[in-house]
Amino acid sequence: MRAYERFLKYISYDTQSEAESKTVPSTEKQLKLAEELKRELTELGAEDVILADTGIVYGVIPASSGAEDRPALCLNAHMDTAPASSGSNIKPRIINNYDGSDIVLNEELGIVTRVSEYPVMNSYIGEDLIVTDGTTLLGADDKAGVAEIMTLCERLLSDKSLPHPKLKIMFTPDEEIGRGADNVDYKRLGAAYGYTVDGEAIDEFSYENFNAASAVISISGISAHTGAAKGVMKNALLMGMEFNSMLPEFDRPEYTEGYEGFYHLDNMSGTVESAKLEYIIRDHSKEKFEKRKEYIASVVEFLNKKYGYDAFKAEIKDTYYNMLEKVSDYRELIDNAFEALRESGIDAKAVATRGGTDGARMSWEGLPCPNLGTGGANCHGRHECISVQKMDKMTEVLERLVAKFA
Image 1 (cartoon, rainbow, N blue to C red):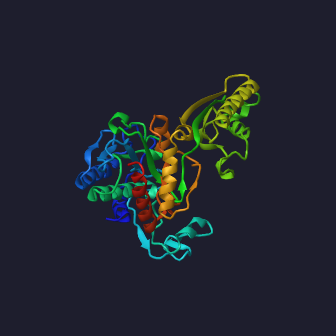
Image 2: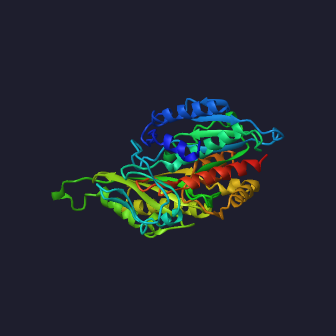
Image 3: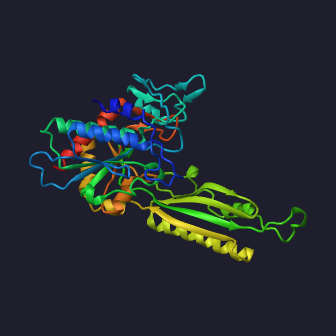
């Protein structure tokens, strides 16, 4: 079975995760796909296939002859889709030999993927492109990675001559809400290093990512009758606006790229009496990352002095760190990936991820784990798409890659 055929099956499962949920995994529906993946791995002949109560699927592909003593390599992808857009009742279609023109996803609703807005579409000309009907996301992030890894498993288990070390396969839930690596059992996994297959373009390889933190700013105002408010009222909503105005205006996602970090106001709520601002803080540089957090604290201190009481409180929590610090000691992970990509005819480049992956978290837990692309684009929304040929190519890359660790 080709990777895209598996992918079309997997996206029939709604696996959207939910940040507000307190359960593990965050949504029970993710377990339905997990059960299917467990069944499929078992039927293919994988060993020690387990669906943990945390929703993580583990499996083992035994090493090829002569590679039994090599360190075990993990391959990981996540099952859930982003809360940002519906993953229910996905209606995919394949555009054969895409000609590079705008794509009408849904004529009735007037939903069009315009090349002027999504220039990445030019990289898919001549390929067979899987798209949505414009009412949901597609799920290439990251069911494409799941499909590519599973297709590799089928190849290796059906052709014992293909070289590879012992492979530890792991499919995780809840990556999209930042919990994908929370419950990994590293002892059960038993891998020395690994790769996530969770990027977009297959000619981009990532072994560095943002340092990340959250900052919740709680503001205590003073309410008063508007007719007698002079000199008394402290409007928490306006105080929150003042706080936000003190952050660098151009240090926002919409103004930054590459290695440029940012503050992002993700949510705000409140009344005159109390308000809350929720930010995410990102920077590739550890030094700049720390300074960003320090600046938030300094603004809180300044405003509290201005207002004469502890009106502002900041709760800052680190979320994940740049994997570069951990992966750079394992040069073979980087070199082998670039060699496998080049041997597959892909002129790849290193790209610093402007986000995070399960691999970033796992790298800091002692499992260095850089990230490969899947062939998808425009993830987390209705314009998401993926190429049939690029999925085949990434499966080829994985086959060449695991051979280098044998």
